[in-house]
Amino acid sequence: MKQYFILISLKSLRSVINILFFITVIFTYASCNEDEDIIIEDTIDRTVIIYMAADNNLSDDALDNINQIKKSISNPKFNVIIFVDGVFETPSILKIEKNRSIIVKNYPEFNSADAKELNKVLLDIISMYPSKNYGLVLWSHGISWLPSGASLRSFGNDNHRQMNISDLASFLPIKFDYILFDACLMGSVEVAYELKDKADYIIASSTEILSSGFPYPEVINELSQLSPNMNKIAQNYFDYYNALQGAYRSATISVIETQHLPELAYQFKILLEENTVDLTTFNRTSVQRLDVYEEQYTFDLADFINKAFPDADKTAFLAQLNKTVWYKNNTSQFIQLYDINTYCGLSCYIPIFKRTDLNEYYKQLSWYKAGGYDKLFRKF
Image (cartoon, rainbow, N blue to C red; front, side):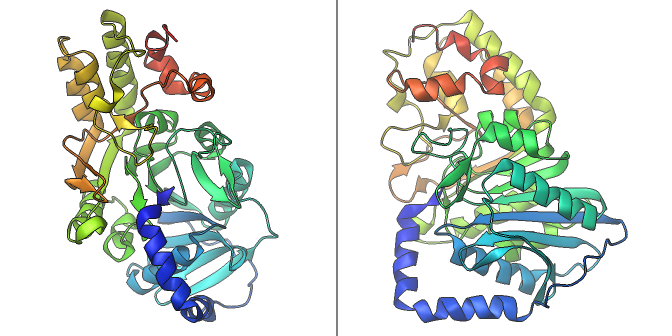
């Protein structure tokens, strides 16, 4: 999910000026042409695909971001293609150009949080806009690896229907140069490992993201480059939020190079095989938290290892972690609810004894198998 504490105040403000929302809707689509015959364009070097599953309470934020992108885009040699499904319009594919968006395809209403539908949309875009390189932005609610139906969600929300991260991985049709998550809590080792064969790089936040999302005026043109500077994109995100005041000064961000994840899993597995921890008595709250939930589901990966195995030799694991995480940064607090004293760039789940639903689902994840998490579950 995107962060609700800030979102509530923004929604309240918009309810006072509700008429402006409809003006925004009109403004967004006034520059769009009527549906055009779909033309398959010549192959170009870079296409950025932004998939907005916004048929939920983030619809107005989606419109804001689309308008930001239209105003900010400056490279006509590359494609920026947005799929948007919001409460304000039928699902559509938009081609973004300077100060305008062109509707290139409309769909009948469907569940944009369904992985099969995402697959169809991405295949449509790829066929219409052949490119040597593709980048993907996944924009919606999110909560790391957690399963749909557990009163939480993994990625995407369409009228309270969600997508599991394993389904997302299965239905992404190609390997992208990068996947950027403009969604909460997706900077976890479980998500990264599930998607390691679907992108060379993953840019994500391990905490919630405020409802305004990524600052697209600062990142869209870098995302559109033939060889985007991933660290610069992440740095721009951090700089934007770090410059704000009060609860708005809240962010974590990291860049993950996925080719190093198998070795990270191997080193993690060795630690678990050579050391033991009893999670039925382990104090989970001693580990750096990275979500706002009372039950707490996401924790800093390195801090967990340090607290669980204080006397173990963690040199190889930490060296591999530093190789995997290209860039990381964080504000000192998150929405003034908790301090961020340490951040390695990846979060992880520490099993909760009473949550058999989550624990059983977790056993299906690739990270559970590769990282030797069965050693942590042995007393459950």
